[in-house]
Image 1 (spheres, rainbow, N blue to C red):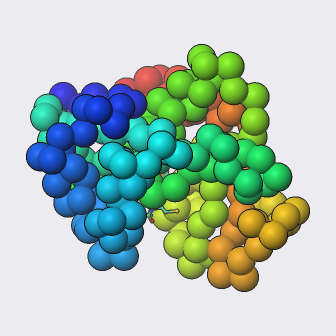
Image 2 (image 1 turned 180 degrees about the vertical axis):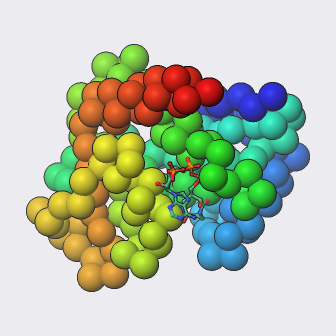
Length: 171
Ligand SMILES: CC(C)(COP(=O)(O)OP(=O)(O)OC[C@H]1O[C@@H](n2cnc3c(N)ncnc32)[C@H](O)[C@@H]1OP(=O)(O)O)[C@@H](O)C(=O)NCCC(=O)NCCS
């Protein structure tokens, strides 16, 4: 059974961190281990969410809720799903879990993400869940090789509510 949850720093054992690195390395172009340790264990900048298949981590995503992007937004980084679990809606569910966490905790900032223009699966995913490609509005947004995208949290929640409702109808 798959479960989605926010993972607190204190709950990241060395074994769990190893599993997170397996997911991270599965794409061949992930962050190095020191940066990942800072995101998941030693730093205090990011909120981290995982999808687990029983006791195995199979996908993860991090957010910086105090990012300078878009002149202040909840910035999504480092979304990765193990290749053998892709195309089953896991990325959408992880984004939904994190979005609900921020809404439930009273956040009203935009959520944003930057994505390589050539990464068609990710661009499609973000557009599907409600993000839109925007023009850069500050230095932190500028990158010729990446799109900067944003959305309100509520828009993502409503978009995903509709998608999940449709999926239930189809089944
Ligand atoms: C991008 C990624 C996170 C998608 O994860 P996923 O769990 O397979 O995504 P979902 O099953 O939730 O797919 C949702 C939508 O994303 C888009 N999408 C996902 N994979 C796609 C692919 N291979 N080609 C085109 N569109 C794709 C589709 O719009 C899909 O909706 P659909 O199934 O109705 O067509 C995954 O491919 C991945 O880990 N890639 C490597 C890391 C990466 O690029 N991360 C993003 C960094 S910005």
